[in-house]
Image (tube, rainbow, N blue to C red):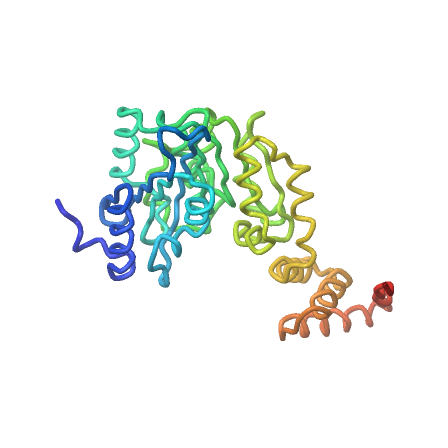
Length: 325
């Protein structure tokens, strides 16, 4: 049955834009009532000597997404600047991409050896998309997985401790492409990005095990490490490092050292330090931010922290002055 009329994805505007993109250089299919897939070929030809890469991403459409660049900005940039072919799965709402139509498409791609046409395949996603990236990587053994705050599963028997997503209890995380850590066992490398201060995210991350798994601890970045790393300006560097095999925890930590100058990171740091009732850390972080910018949140946080420090009889050190040139 043609589900074009039922497939909304923001009133059909994003649907139309993705269909136009697919017609120009690939394909676009609607998958059931809540999903779609866009494939964009790379810009290579038969005489190219560069290895071909397929970037497989899983994204949830937002209210303001009107194009491929909106719904998957990372994939769009990689397509334009690095020539990566794109296979982008889009969901309407948080579905964890649990849909028979998606399973059937992956089955078909495996049967037709679709993935064999690429030298390298990268699966990418965040949250529910991170779960999907790991789970569907089983279709392309030897691939690379980058998953940000992924759930390993939300099957009630295996993750009864995660009560954040009651809507997921009706979904099947068992029958096909189910338990993400097992499904990603055949990947060459799996990178799991998470904030260790987010308890439930950490519990999911620790279910991914093995020598091929690298746990990338994004301290104080909260439940959206993808956004945090994007804000730090290192996301594309991480993908490049994962692609060429140079990304290690040490390289990762060196890349994100500049996060101490990033407002997104500092806000997360302040939020976490306030939850942990650490006024000294809160005051130091907010003072750092207010040296660069203004903001009611940071001013109030600094005032509250200073009041607590006064009660404790503590003071902050004098700010370091820049040396004259």
